[in-house]
Length: 460
Image 1 (cartoon, rainbow, N blue to C red):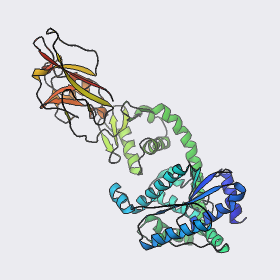
Image 2 (cartoon, rainbow, N blue to C red; image 1 turned 180 degrees about the vertical axis):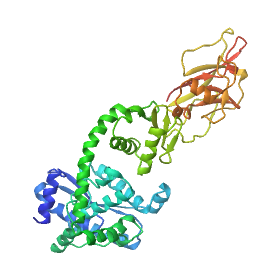
Image 3 (cartoon, one colour; image 1 turned 135 degrees about the vertical axis):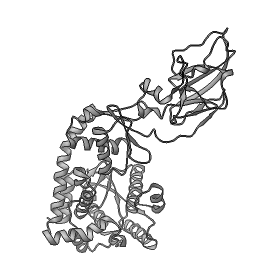
Image 4 (cartoon, rainbow, N blue to C red; image 1 turned 30 degrees about the horizontal axis):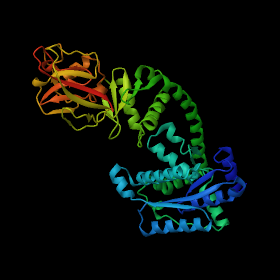
């Protein structure tokens, strides 16, 4: 069976393409993506496919990168296919997001391709990864400790992304290019051993083939396929577990029931945590150490213990729950003026303070947690809203004694992961209102009150 027949058979086996679909082909100009385009072009008439070519110039290799872009553009013109390209500053992106050059280039490229796919309303994005790439990916994941999920390597399809060349060995692609006299460009960065993938490609895999034989790459890929089957079985258990174990909190936090979570096998626990980080929280760098830290919090952590998962997301042990939240992000103080509503940062509510005359000296009471009344003449200014700080204290209404806000939250059964997101209204240096919970007793309305300040929060 020649490469074209294998290609079509692989596409059909994994249902990668349907007749009449619109396919966006990512073409770097290298041999793999150019051969992929050629194979899809061979299929195009009988399968009634619509093809377009996309190329990202990473801006990393100067004139050679511009040469690659020009080559792909000319290729698309020769094949009478639409061509789309973009030049990006990957170095700036890497610096901004704290990523490696390899990670940054991949992120920028994928973001461009997926945005283009959506804009053009195409059905699939075809990438040129092949069997050797698969083996390299699996080995990279193994040395990073990625576990069963990493051992799968790349999937033939995931969403709209397809990899129709995963069946093909590199030498098959090279033979095909030679047979059909296909021109391509060579990216010098593919031999740069600063990148882990290239060290595995040029040092590790050749050494393995020398030690164990040329069958090493197919065997690694077969291991990946077996791992994918095992992971699919475990994932079914994970989906069922997720319904029992995970819920969303009122402020968007993800809450995991630890007792139920620990009743599952370790493999289910790890994949469930991975899914939460990847799908719910959309973390990009999910390492084995992050999963291990979360497992430790669930198994041995004490309430209040936490671990940072990235710049924004924190995992917190709260009683019998493991909570994922971004509530630890510091938010600035918000100045407040009477009579002017203000939005409370980090909340879906607006704050408003207004004045009203006292009604015959009677106390003002309300059952609503979102509305309170204060004696205006006892309040210091300026007014402002901020969040909890260690050492905060006030005189809760009805108590007459000073109490640390930390202890008040414990008495009110406010989970520790929510305490940092409870707004506080301050007048001068005094806490006037723990919003939604209690005002300070010193500023309550009494029979001597002449002027009342109504304070309230309401949805935006």
